[in-house]
Length: 441
Image (cartoon, rainbow, N blue to C red; front, side):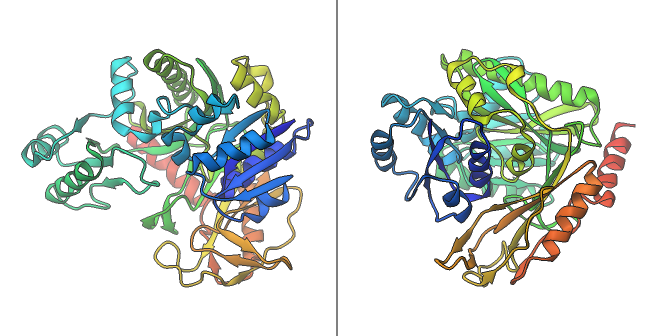
């Protein structure tokens, strides 16, 4: 068994670890955009290169003849890497370009949900011209000045501006929307939703969706949910695979929306969606809405989810490819997880610590460490990159226990680094429960 993994980052390390734990012990052939030491140690062959160079990837695929490929990041998916691999008879766990629009185009997603009567959208409108007066009127009259502007293409998680956080007037919002249109041709302007965000990911094969544990991410850089947005400073999940602030109906509805969306994608694109369907949801006063969809594992969400997977990840991937996926193939342990990201001290504002030495403690059975933007010398010395360094995950019988494990290990990391101490704590979880309870009264 040979598996071709196209990835990088801590998410890629978590995916590689899931393959390594398969009873089938596949040879992992990894192509990464950086010299990730975690993925490298788990791979029988490891190549560093441009993962947007599809000719380079295809040449390795032809040489190694893997049984299937798994694509981790969104950029190669959105550009059609799955199509290229399928053309040379490499089955791929990732949606083709047309289906990957669920992430690469915010406008496509909003229109898809509307067209197929999936009632999970906020108020929205897609604009394709720079008519500022029409955008101003929509924000002022339809959205009452509470709005979100979304760049209608992949922007590395940095294409969204929220009123009151990133822009502070309708004029500022319209100005940003005009820049979006100039760069990518369209922009989505939508209602600002109030509630609690959560992620529900599904293994997806055609119209079959099998849920993973729900996770909550923390995007803000600093404690107390302050500072600029990041790729994610940490995440947590609960033992029952829901979250403390969600009701049974919230999870049921989010699951239903994922299933309806997979079906809509197949009807719209004329072929099955095969891969990971990542629903970004928000629990609001009267139910659940879709914030966005992604076409891959989240980072950090994958770091919480994959260590709990008890079934064979290779079999799940085969089930996705052959459209034989069913619930019996997917089993998760009933444990809680807390992930805290170690980052350079200056992240995300500067890269002043890049190249500095960092060291990690020994990891016990109830914890994991997944390497992100980090490099390793021949003697094993680790050096910081400019972005998120590593995700440290605690696993326990409660969120509180998992948080204590992760926190202790984070305190033992040596180097010019930082992390958010509050992620997964009882205080921050209680605030989320109280906020949603108050909203729904």
